[in-house]
Length: 327
Image 1 (tube, rainbow, N blue to C red):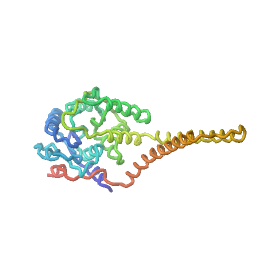
Image 2 (cartoon, helix red, strand yellow):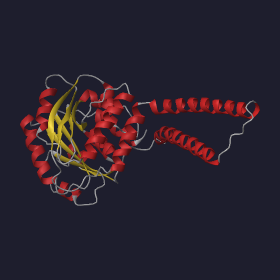
Image 3 (cartoon, rainbow, N blue to C red):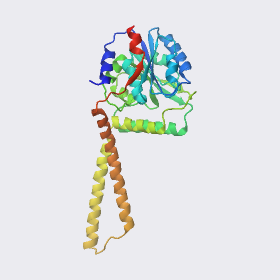
Image 4 (tube, helix red, strand yellow):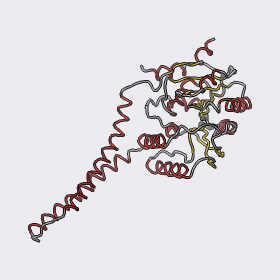
């Protein structure tokens, strides 16, 4: 049994009266810790006295961890991962340890206002299993990021049968039932917003305006966003593989027709097809298609390879959770 499975089973067996858990992944967010905790605590207290805030330090290289240790709040816990495992796995580390009946996922950059949690919880009390925060405005983001995000979600919905809400991130509330099923999805290449959408159940939205980042710089570079997009598509759609198959069929048919034409031109029309340029262009075109096809197949094979190795999803370096909960 791997580490992830052990953590999942142990947390599922924990009896707790915690009403609300807030899971916050952090990567080099030293400038946001004080204000973030103040706003999260104030919002949680306005909902219930039975809450916990779980901060996950995803291998930060600044003073994020030391500032978490300086928080004097018995309801604030931290998990320090042994290195940077990535945003999605950092969130999963927090979810594995969350004890609440309702669990909120919110990033630590404060672009998602903590006060919106109150609205998410209000909708949850109406009987919804999932309440996701949908961005009405995206302040502080450039045009390129806004356009590519819109295109990605619309493309993903076209390629898959899963209705993944557009203009949303991981900022959402899920209930304990959803979390139980989410833990049963062991794949290493996590795309949590897609996995939660795949589960179905009663889901609804809350509109909000996303704020500009106050401190630091985003850890989500273009490379990481592209990687997440590829993970989302390959995790929930076989369309790229079907595209490869169709390309192969059409190219084979085209090649067969060209062979027939060449035979006709040589033996019947007594013309010889010449031209190094056309030959090189054809070779380059078909070579490019072959490499593209191999790349798409490789993405799927790579994800299978990651999962069959059965390594832990993450490694915990240090944590206050188990110590303080058992005292």
